Image 1 (cartoon, rainbow, N blue to C red):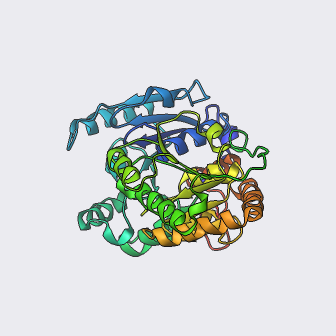
Image 2 (image 1 turned 135 degrees about the vertical axis):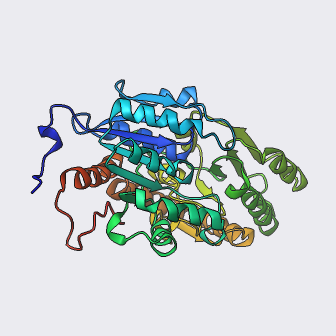
Image 3 (image 1 turned 30 degrees about the vertical axis):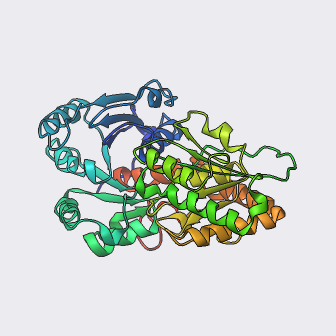
Amino acid sequence: MKQNVSPADKKQAPLVIHIVNQMGYGGVELGIINIVNTMPKERYRHAIISQTGCRKGIVSRLSRPDVKIYTLSKRKGNDPRIFLRMWKILRQLRPAIVHTRNLATQENQVVAWLAGVKTRIHGDHGWDTTPDKILYRAHQLRRMLRPFVKHYIALSQEIGDYLVKKIGVHPDKLSKILNGVDTRKYYPRERAEKDSFSVCTVGGLRPVKDQANLVLAVKKLLEKMPHMHDRIKLSLIGDGPARKELEALIAAGHLENIAEITGFRNDVPDMLHEFDIFVLPSKAEGIPNVILEAMACGLPVIATDVGGNRELLVEGETGFLVPPSDSEALADALQIYIQNPHLMKIHGIAARKRIETYFSLETMASAYMRVYDMLLFRQPQDKQGKAVGRTV
């Protein structure tokens, strides 16, 4: 009979290798950085493997000098050579756990199995579409790879339901762990009283993020409240392939004087303090870090009712949920705040309190450690026998 062994009893903490497609500035990558930085080093060691490349700036966010990032320089399209490179690294490092993220890396579950890694975890963080529009071949690939995955982590209830109902994952092999946010880096500041309103969104300028929906909503808002034309500012923070289209939309709506596209920014925590309302107008999401960051800064949030957004904000208490691609509903939600400034403050205070209660980095890291401990050391499970991470 295998005895339970605490990680603290080991001479060297178990090694977790996190595999990601690209080590950039997306939510998946920042989530890994947060886990690595927050998890006690005496409990688990970490390494990161990027299939493609690694953005220089992301490395500076690692606070643990013992964590090494490996890049495999994958070519565009199919590049079978990376599997041999991956196998060699895994054989060299001999990790206790391999943790892949999203479909682009899930084939490495087979590589990890061939390399002799017994504890293999796969995390699904979300998609660039709604679950009903996921391509059939993506369903097939996930089903084919399912036998190689020892345990799944879903970042929202929607993702968990998809894995169980569409992919056939047994509920006992599934944990739900929501993201966390650095409450010391993202925090509220006192805002001066003013008669103007500033609205922002943060994210890559891509069709799935649907910043166009927000631009149209502001245009409709000003049609309802023309006296507010000089008292509203809209900032789209980010960059990407949809930038030219958004610039044209702003010009067509004669919003150049109030709307701006800032491009990519490294100072988002400071920028968020300049705004009154945060909006996430996406067509699809997983568990977006930007909502958590805005709430941590004490901002009320208006978000589309997609992905895990409903699990983050509380309708009517910390913000509002609106249907995706519905600029009229989004304009109505903005109008409620503009006509009731005190409500913005009430919702902002409630948002920060919710973050402190449920979404700190420490809470998230503890949830991941519980899953790692359960799989490696057979720690006791909950009453249902499920290794659930955290449900809000």
